[in-house]
Image (cartoon, rainbow, N blue to C red):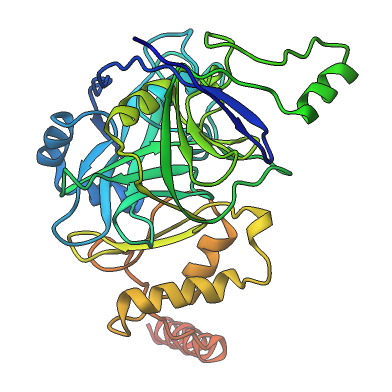
Length: 377
């Protein structure tokens, strides 16, 4: 027998969620074939595990990676070639478990809507694990990505792209936990949304029932933080950008998979780490940066914060270039940058500048000597 309960949640989003007791099993999207990236500077060698790592990843469900025995990096960059002229960059991103901003930053010169048949697309499926305890759920807001460390499956980390709160509806930073899981939720638009709709002359429903028009999708996981949820969406094209009113949105297939396996009471760490650093298993130190959310900048000093993070990581064992760190912070595009180790670019040796006056004198001597020899001949 199905039972239904109505939950009134008051806060930034003023949601009303309708519970249905029916449950379904987890669904996993099968990984697609991968092609090793070429020309990815410092990153192509980061997949030095090569074919073995790729083969191992194909055996795991979508978004699942084995935690490294040493180091902080999972996954790999690779490329795919567009085969369907009608396929958009956003379609490709979703198929490869990548979000909107991730695919855009990795392919800045490719059209979002018409990448074109035959175009090579970079899939940035390599991740530095966030600077947080590896337990429960960790959501890095600036990165627009969720990480899950299942307690019943040690040695595995799952990661999925997410959307977070847009300007004016910031997702809060803090520690919370999951509470109730909702299948086929109903949604009550908050009063502010109803007023905005009325001003546009559009109908404003009091309740949106479960179905294809429901913004929460088919699955929702409530947090112990009034009005904030992890849920699906009826507009998956927006996953991976700042698009919500504070909630965490996921692709429908990702939230469906997570829904069945995420226990109620799981710790959720909502953090904002736009600068990440970590070791690869070959001893290379990588960093990557993302655009920081303006509401979380406060009085922070990005460069000093980054250097402090690096100092904690390297413990004064290696020297890193402050200029490279500064460049990464000023160009927050999510790309891996190798600061130290086997994959770091070699420093060009310093060259002693030539003294032009001495060089000219030597040339003059050689010329005059040549002339005298010619005269004697």
